[in-house]
Structures are given as C-alpha cells and as structure tokens.
Image (cartoon, rainbow, N blue to C red; front, top):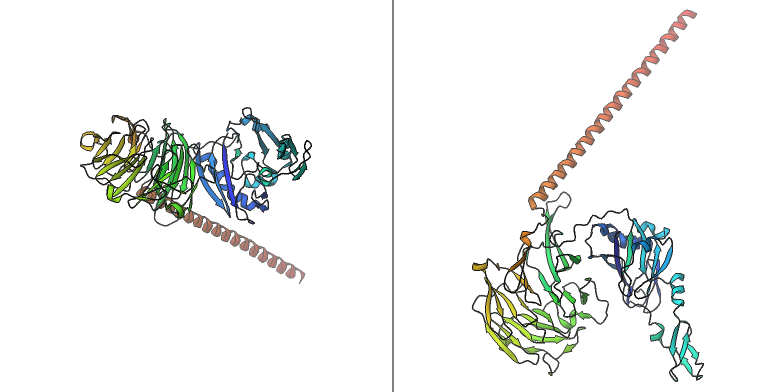
Amino acid sequence: MISVAVRIETECGTCRMPMPVNTLAREVGCPSCGRPTEVSDDVWQALLRDPVYDGPRMLTNEGRQCSARKLSAAYTRRGPCCQGCEEEISVASIVEVREQAMLRCDRCAKQTWVRAVPVELAGALPNITHLVGEDPDSPAMAQANAAEAATFPCPQCGSPVAFDGVNRAYTCRFCSANVHVPDDFVYRGRRKVAADWFLIFHPSIADSAPAPQAVAAGLFDWEEPPMAAVDAEGNLYCAARQLHWVSVGTHLAREKHESVLWCIDPSMNVRWLQRGRSRAVHFVLSPKGTLLVTDRQTSVQPWLSGRTGTPTGEPARMVKESDGGLSDCDDLACDRDGSLLILDGGVLRRLSPDGAELPLWTGGAPGSVDLTEITGGLKRLQCGTDGSIFLLCSASIVRFAANGREIYRAEFSSEPPEPRYRTFGVDRNGNAYVLRSGQLARISATGELSVVLESKRDRLPQSEMSIAVCPDGSYWLFGREGRAWRLDRDGELLFASEKESRPKKLTYQQVVERQMDAVKAKTQAEHEASERLMGERRAEAARVERIVGIVAAIVVLGLLALLMVAAAMS
C-alpha cells in the first residue's frame, strides 16, 4: 500500500510566528499565541493536490515540496511510523480503523491517532482512505492524554501537586504552600516544529514508480559534475542540476533545468530524493550526519537530516545568510564539533551551528584570520577528524593543527583544475585527495605526495571533474553528462555509471519531432472534425431538402384535390 508523509507549515496571522499544521482541519491553533487560523477546503485541496497526484509516481523516500497561499508542504513517499521511535505501523491495523482510533506503539507505547478520511474532506483527498499521525485538538486525543496525569513539584517541599492543565494556582496538600504553575510547564507538551503525518492511499492505486535503484531511476543524470559527500556509513549525498528538453504548447522545444538533492546507500538504493529545489551553491556534510545545502534564494539555511533529507526541526540549527555570508563565500566546511568554517577571499572564520562567531584556533580569540600571506590564493577547505584544517591553494596544500600550527605544506607540479568544482577531500586517517589537471594526487597525513591516478595511464580522471572521499579512503569521481566512478583507495574501479543501463533522455530533435507529430495529429484531428461537420451539414441540408420536396408535393396534391372537388361541384 502506498503512503505519503506530509509536513506542513504556515505563519500565524496574529503573532506572525512559524506555525506547524499537524492536522487536516478547517481551524488550526498557533502553539505560540494560541490563536486559531482558518484553513479553507479549497486551500487544502490546492495544497494536497501534488502529494495525492505524485504519491504513486515517486521513488521510495523521494521528497518534494509544494505550496498554496501561505502554507508550504514537504512530502515524502514512505511508510507510516510512530512519531516517538519511528517503528513502522502495520497497514493491517490502519485498514481496520473504520472511523477513528488510537494505536499504541509496541516499542515505546506512544499513541498514534488514525482516522478514516471524513466525508466533508473527501473532495480534497481522492483515493486516500486514512490519515495517520495527526495531532488534532480532538476528543479522541484529549481522552488519550487524560490517562497520563500531570504533576508539578512543589517548590517548597518537592511533593507532587496534581495539575489539571487549566488552573495555575494550587495549594500543596503536604506543606500548604501556594504553588503557581509556570508557562514553561503548561506548554511543555506543545510541538514547536512541524511533524510528519501520513496520507494512506486506497489499495487499488497502482504503484507506477520506477525501480528503487539509483542509476535505473535516472539520478545519474547531470550536465556538470555535481556536489557530493559520503558519510561514515558509506551513504552518498549529491546535489546536481539536471537538464531536459521540453515542449511548451506550439512553441519550439526549450531547455528545462531542475535542481535535485538525493542520497543513496552503498548498495545504490535510493534513501531519499528531492526535486524542484533552488540551485545549490555550497554543500556541507557534518560529522553528525546532518547536511547543509546553501542557495541564493533562502535567507535562513536549515540543517537537513541525513536520514530523510528534511529539516532537523531544531530551531537552533539554522544559519542566517546575513550573519554568515554562506552563499557568497569561496568554500564551507564542518568541523568535528559541528562548527562551520567559512573561507572567503583568503580570510578564514569559524561559526557555531546557529551562526555565532567562534575562535578559529583552539585557545584563540573569536574573529576571522587572514591567511593570504601564509598560503597565497586559497581555493578549497576541508576539516580532518582530528580537528586539523586543510587548505588547498593554486600550487600547494597546507595542513594546520587545531591550534593553528602548520603541520606540512605539499607543493604540486601539475596545473590546478577547474576551481568551481569540488576537487578536494580528506579521509578519516588524514589522507588528502586532490584532483589536478590530468591526475589524482594523494597526500599522506605527514605530507608525502603520490599520484594515485593519471589520465594517460588510467584514462581517469577526465577534465572538469569533482570528487567525494569516503572515510575508508575509497572515493567517488564525477564527470560531465552523468558519468560517475567509484574506486577503492588503490585506484581499482568498483563502479562506473556508464556501464549501467540508464533511462534514455529525449534529445532536442526527438522533442521537436514529437511536438511536430502532436501538431500534425492535432491538425489532422481538426481537419477530420471539420470534414465530419461539413458532412453532417450536407446531410442535414439534404434532409431538409427532402422534407421541403415532400411538403411541396403534398401541397400540390392538396391543391389538385381541391380543384377536382370544385370541378365536380360545378
């Protein structure tokens, strides 16, 4: 059975604070000010049109976005699960629900609200049978929460004081002290961020999504080398731009660019995928498995979950463009403590995960450090697992310890590659891998340089390439037109996308031909319709002519009969 997780947010019309919409209802309360906001049926219908239509056509764990009015939705194709421990909820238990029910998780005992789609909302949700995981202010939810009595500790003696959720003032039954329940305790259970709830499709809806394999699904489809990174488990994260030729009405075919962000596991199965994003400028993977993808359209950059590709939901894990200058800097990296290193014009600075200024070196003062005189023209930046910092220049690579001490400086003899691509990576042992013109160089943790691949000898790497280094020292190389290779640390080829069966893209000529065929078919259909109409008109004219002839004959016969009667009477 197909299910789609949706996460919806809007802005409170009263306090203007971000407001999660964790239920399908005509009125939703703001968790900040408590004021209700109306969501009409036509808004719900416009917002959920894409999730309902796209669900059967999406890859497993693929994510997309849509919006209607002031509501924005992120939706992902995945199975329903408990919001406490993410244990999968069985489809059989959902189907058994006729109206509404609370399903208790066997692992964490958290209850999940399940209800059949109400009749009044069925028009907005065609082919959807159930809603799972909502958080409505409903009698069913209130009854479930009533079983969990809340108590507040007396500030004088520490004894539990029963709290009914409404009154604030109580008297302790042990020491008779006056107890006031603060706001922080009253609102402790309210969600501050949007949560996933699920649309369950009818069993008759066919699964029309492609096979969940990265190459067969068309993910290895880009014009220029993508941005990529690999986490400790070997999962590959990639931000790419795809190009397609499309036809628009009767106009000539045009290019359509689409930015995609996806993650695949070591077996090349898709973990999640997002389409329709803004073009990525920088791409950073943290040691904790979170992802920061910056663009020029968003003023506040959220950290994304490496497991799902969605925002982590932590308000503190947001970086403001105005504070960090993320999109305009030369390069970004994430250190072992989660702090961000920003390289801009030879100046290096460190920010906390939420954008606060930090000392660059251990024991130093907060603020940026100009390294131009030390390293020359800086190009790229990487962080080691031990806190060291690697800086790539035009003709050398320099490694600094966490306290700012220079560990080594290795000089290159070959020409630098295209600077706009990621040509630099570091493994967990401190080995640095650098793509140069016609070769891939490896610099050991102590600064010894060796050539791993050479274009004349190994046919790899090619020009205009990017690299993503795995923690174990293996690495991915990415070329143009969807080409990708995975190699072990000794340079042995493990995977080549060009050897796999990939879906063929329509060329410009094919799109034009299809467009011309469509125009011809339309013209032919219009011609046939015109001929059919003319034939019907001719047939109608002949029928009218026959009727007129018959009427005329009847009139003549009638006149003759009258004449004969008149002659007989005379």
